[in-house]
Amino acid sequence: MLTLDAVSQKQKSFKADNRTIDKTTGEYKDPLMRWPLRGAAFTNEVGEALRPVIGNYATLSWIPALLYIGADIYDKYKNDKNEYSPDSRRCLKQAVFQGMASIFLPLIAVKLGQNVFSQFGKLGADKISLNSKEHISKLAEQFIANGKMHAFHGRDNECTKEFLNIVSDSMDYKDKKKSYQNIFRVFKTDKKSSISKYTERTIEDLIKLRKDILNPSTEFKASKWYSEYIKNLKYGQTENVAIKNVLSKFQKQKMMKGDFLKTLGGFVALGLAIKPIDYFVEEVLIGKYIGPGIDSIKNK
Image (cartoon, rainbow, N blue to C red; front, top):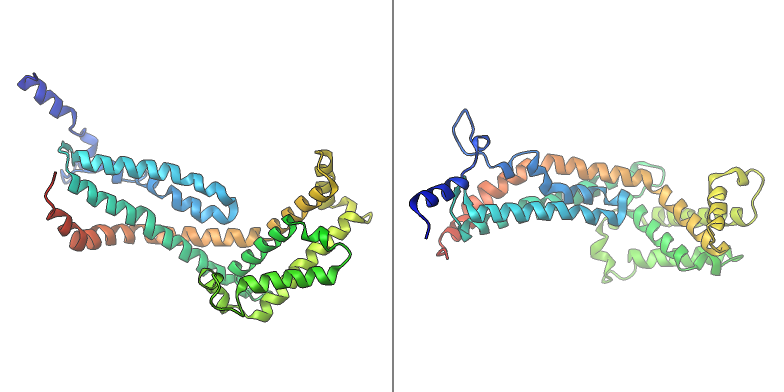
């Protein structure tokens, strides 16, 4: 059985140290909600903002964010500020806060920022959004990976027509009920003629590069793409696989500027939105609506 001194000692062990008390106001300062530690909640948004550049590696950025969010929710369940006092209602409030303020709303902000900056692509010669270019580029990479370039060897017109049909179908110009309609709404703001011209130029560039690799001129042999092809062959790749990899890398590199611009848009939106989101969720959403309902629940 614990003595009174032991109980007192145990309670003191849960008290925060002086760093959690504001020296000016004497109020409690939650270490988990103060920067830079608070920033751990947004590693996933940073990853998502970088996704156009780093691809699926962005998924790894969710790990530190989820660990931080889990630790913060458990801390709020266990402690009432600097006092040990488990409370499931306080835990539920913090779960709602973190879900909205650290995951849902910031992700929306990042995606909106990327979509807004995507529209800057229309200022270029192609007159279409970066989202449209990105989707066409992904279709081109699939076209290459599926061996279509090799299958249409020597039949350039048929190859171009096939790719144009694939892009046209995916953009869903003819059948508005197809699944791409909702996913790629931004295409509705791009002219079909501009997308068709960009699509045709994309496949023509790939056809030309493939021809140059197979029948290289003296000048082309000095290019980085031919060097990349030779390097792939030295690694033991077959001619067809080596060409596929060069074409895919060429297509990805074409999108790098657009990817960086969309990433910048994600970061700008996230930076502008973090504090307003925190305030809205804590003071309005939870403070006025969700919180009172949670407080009315009998604590177990």
